[in-house]
Image (cartoon, rainbow, N blue to C red; front, side, top):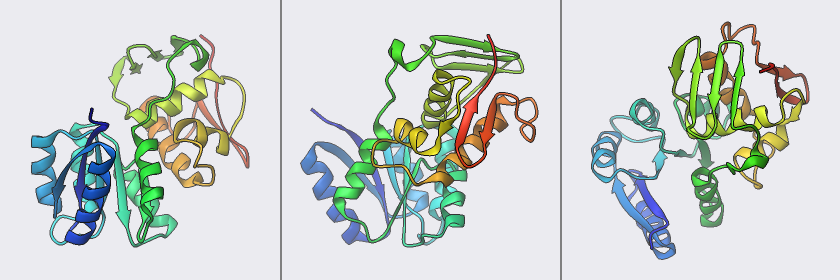
Length: 230
C-alpha cells in the first residue's frame, strides 16, 4: 500500500536518484522533474500528495513554481535549498511553501519533514469546537469551511490547522513552541519565522483590518492567541 505520491523537483540527477531510491523503498510513489516548467506539467499529470521542490534551478525557479502550484492546489510543498538566511526562508514561506530544508540534508531529517508536512491535526472533540462564529467570521471545523466578511475563504491545510489550534485554546496565549509542535510536529519548536508568515497569511484572509487584528492577537515574546466570542 502506497504511503502517498511525492513529486521530486531538482536539476541534480544524483539528488533525484537518491531520493527516489529511499522514498520508493519506504513505500512512496515518486515522480521526478528537473525544472520548474517540467514540475508544473508533471504536477498536473501525477497529482502528488507532496512536492519536494529545489529552489535554485535554471529557467523557472522554485519560488515561481511554488507560487503557481499554490494558486490551484493546497498540496504540501517543502523547499530544498543551499541558502539558509531567515529572509530567504520567509520568502519561500510567503510563496506558499509549508516547510524549508537546507542542503546538504540527511535523509532522516528529510523524512521527518515529509511526515510532518503530510500529517493532519486531530479532528476529534479534543481538538476544539466543531463550529465557531465570531463577528463576521464563521468556521466549520468538520467541513473545513471558513467565511469572512460574508465570503468563502480558502485556507491551506497548515493555515487551517494553525487556526484550529488557536481557536481550541481561545482566550489563552499559546507559546510559539507549543503552536509549532501542535501544527508541524514534535521536531519543531524554534522556527518562529514560520509562525510570523502563517499568522500574517491568516490575518490577511480573515481580519477586517489585518494591520489591527481583531481575532488573532500577538502576545509579545510569548506567542499568539485567538479572541472572539460566539
